[in-house]
Length: 214
Image (cartoon, rainbow, N blue to C red; front, side, top):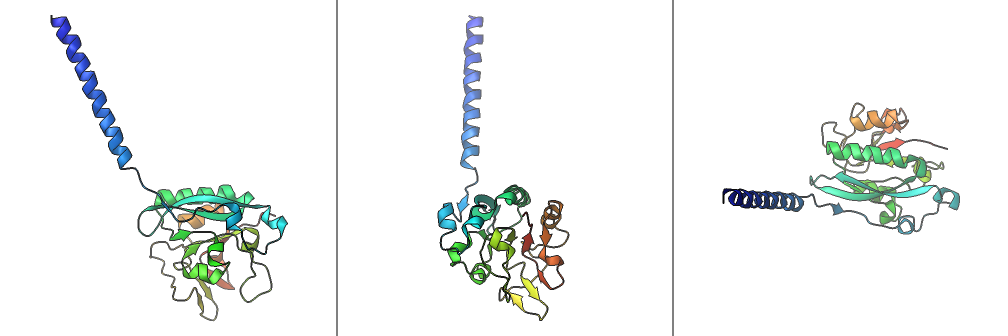
């Protein structure tokens, strides 16, 4: 009789324990972070309308990246970048996600009809864009997928004549989403061989990082 009770209560205890584990599992699943999708394009959609030659397009890749935005929620966006820079970009976005460094949005610039100004004014982080450097006939490194601009509104381009782009932006080093010379983004990308526009003398392009691989 005692042995029966021991086995019976042992089975009951095991059942209750399993039930508690299952409840905890489903509770955690219910609390899993919902990812907000900012961009979900195909590669063909992401390069639609570009004037880039075929030899450049063949070296481009469309990648999905995750980041916390200024709403403190996890988002998924996309970036078009040179194939040899994919691992670097994945690494820096993973670090930004872990540190919860806010990125407003990250959408291929085709959404803005290939307008760099429109993309910057929407505070969009972007990579490839076949275009010339502002006020120049020289192709930008964005044209090859060699560059990324992060949070243009927090990290504007500041020209020697005092002009700031995008309009209405301001560089405040203590504001969330701002890149500085000693922040982890700058330090890590420099380790990987990237250069930062914030170090330039001709202008200060705080949003801009580039790495030429060809």
